[in-house]
Length: 77
Image (cartoon, rainbow, N blue to C red; front, side, top):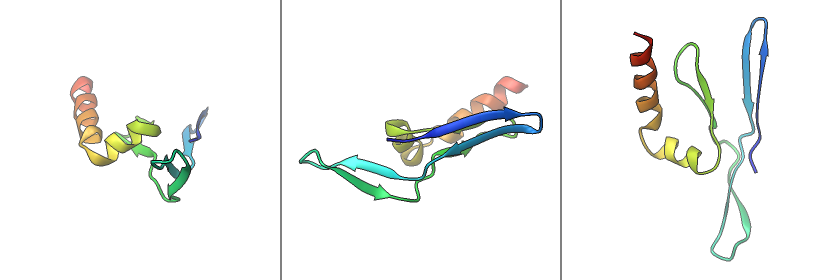
């Protein structure tokens, strides 16, 4: 289970997430994959993303972050 939290303050936005990555093995038992997983990504100066589950694996394995970043920059023009 992952935990992500966000809050807005007069000074800005705060994003926080745990860093544990877990999975189920072939017998269905929960296992710890890592205690140092990255779940927060800054897309630009104004946008950050917190990801968990399969979304986390897709961002780490592919180019999703750069794709989203390009799309967001293009939409700001």
